[in-house]
Image 1 (spheres, rainbow, N blue to C red):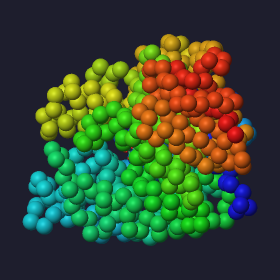
Image 2 (cartoon, rainbow, N blue to C red; image 1 turned 180 degrees about the vertical axis):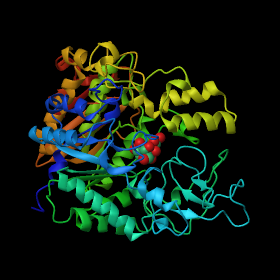
Image 3 (cartoon, rainbow, N blue to C red; image 1 turned 120 degrees about the vertical axis):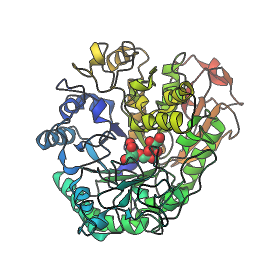
Length: 565
Ligand code: TEU
């Protein structure tokens, strides 16, 4: 009933990056059978929903985010029969399965693009963004691209197709041409495919860069940042003019009338709180929640992602406070600090050497005690860390490799300096194989892994963690149980305390006359608490209770959840 909160307000989602999760056939790439073999592990963790990064047919230039057939499982992962077996296994354990919907673009090997690029007058020509060279320029001439936009993966966002003399748009790699959502045939084909998957029994979608699908059709140039090579097209395609029309049409054509047990989450780089309220207001029938990116850009310097400047906790407290209060009345937050695009949380915001257990569990406590649906990324529940690769040859992520090549060749930056920023921020930090045990290749594969296993796997792995007195996995189990059991955790109003304290992160959640207080010491030093802040019935802590004496202080990276009313 409308007054009842939706089921996903109390759910916890676990993201699987299949390629790196578990390999059952020794080819060095994770697969569906590997996931099937780990369903009991996931059910034991206590998560409610599994989100699979793409497993569709793909040439894998962007590890499956370049899809060449939306209705085939790529052979490297398995086949539709195995997918049905996985889906059945997930459902039998009381969990749900969400697919990754990548429809801002396809692979250049998709049939649709093959047809669209075959001739200027093919009926599918208008399924993608084709434009003549810029006025006054010949095809292939420098500066002939229709706009000056840069691709997210370095280089221009347009590539010339010599056979037809036109350029096509790709906000990501040239192997990922953007679909033209202005074309109703494109939209209809996407909705038909989505319905096919829902009819198969999947429980929803995570929608890749879904707020990029509506572009400013006049395709204006973007501002070229100081020292940059390309214009910033983002203001002309982020949350564009028809995005709400498209999402409401998608809801009518796909989700309306279906089981309310579905879940949708839109990945939305650059989305603001005002936009997020529109996207997730249930009355507007667009999406259930979105992934916003404000908190994962706070440690970027003026030069962006690779200009790493470290996190100022005050910035994160202010950002999350804005999103908690901004979405308190309308809409719903997702909560995440890890995914396949972000470096590992415990290395980025914690201390992965001296206080790995404490800082991993502190950040888990902070995330799971905010209001919203928490997302756990594979390995986060084990405190897996960034990987200390020593050479660009060790990396596989095209975003990192393309950046290295452009930064050293076109910008003339020092290769060692470029490599050190890649080591901190590369997406491959999150994509090294899951560390299951201290067996060869961390028990991920019996073959040669597609990406090297983190050399710390002998000590950081699921077997060792779960046998430990201080198990991160068990701490996540307790957090998930707390959410399932407590309406205050699920729905309670958020109030930030000590807004300006440089290392204390403290807040309350109130609901139905009950108040929880969370206090966390986001530092490696002891912290003296403001008067009375640490008192209350301890519901959860990442340190053993050392008695009344410690109510006045927090130990390094100590987090506590207290019942205070
Ligand atoms: O990511 C979209 C996106 O914005 C990312 O490029 C992210 O901002 C960047 O990686 C941070 O450095 C989605 C998928 O999650 C990503 O894996 C794909 O590469 C991308 O879209 C294209 O499909």
